[in-house]
Length: 73
Image (cartoon, rainbow, N blue to C red):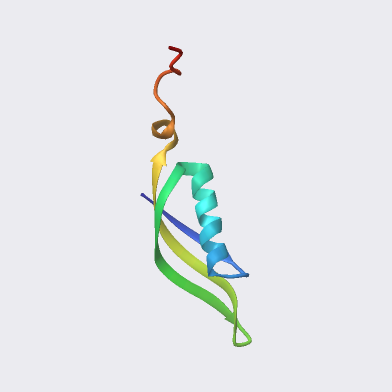
């Protein structure tokens, strides 16, 4: 597992999807996530930024690749 934090001015889903995209590029194939923390910044009584903490489960890139060559029967 890995712990991530992401932010977005446009919404919670954008923050989560941004974190998952970054995790996929750096860690490998992400299988699941859990929101562990949720907070935000308020300016003039409105949400200005969302911040989300995530735990993600992933498969290592090397483990996700096929083992051996292709069958050529």
